[in-house]
Image 1 (cartoon, rainbow, N blue to C red):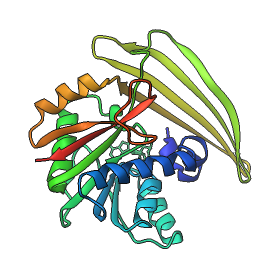
Image 2: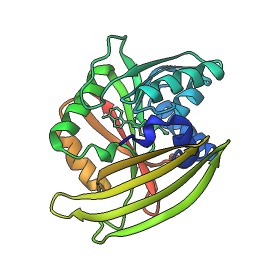
Image 3: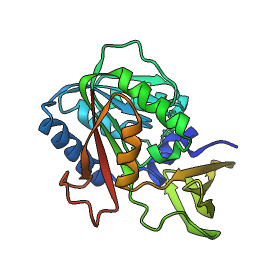
Length: 256
Ligand SMILES: C[S@@+](CC[C@H](N)C(=O)[O-])C[C@H]1O[C@@H](n2cnc3c(N)ncnc32)[C@H](O)[C@@H]1O
């Protein structure tokens, strides 16, 4: 069955964060980079989707590239970059196994709480290895993580049923929580969309297994990976180090 990521316009309307939030996150990214001496240069957006953060950063002096698995997202990112008047290099590839034939990047970002869907240790280690090889020494990697304070979900439930109008297209949306794997530390969420488009109906189904991290887990994880130094956890809203009550936070790493 298709994924919501096969429909970039629908993704942007029903799942992507509001622009005001993306602007705030982008300000936080810029502050964290500037605090580490990076005020411009080459930046890689990981799992870029339609590259909304990257397009804002490209308009603020960064030379931006993106990588995403979905060919439709790659095409949409390129055309949105062009519409915004910025130049983007967008690559199609798997973020757990990629090698870019480019100059090294000064920074990389992975936004929209997507990193935790890489659940297996081998894939996580491979992902960090790929990003490390793409960065110059001293480069900075910022990863957006949902705090998931409730932990691994224990029960089945349907939630978030709604209908959204996207131009002439009507989209029915609902989510299913399944009991997660407590031992493995992973929750399971299925997102459904039924897209009514000019007499056609398309269904999407995304079955996400989501690792539940807190900052301590990530600190331990980073120590197991070669080539990185933990540079702190920060609020995605204002880049402050006070994340105790935040719904999510930015893991910040330096390439060594
Ligand atoms: C929730 S969206 C986030 C998009 C964008 N970063 C944003 O802020 O809106 C997740 C993106 O990850 C991409 N993705 C999922 N698994 C991937 C993988 N293994 N390799 C590359 N991209 C992947 C999807 O195609 C999708 O565009």
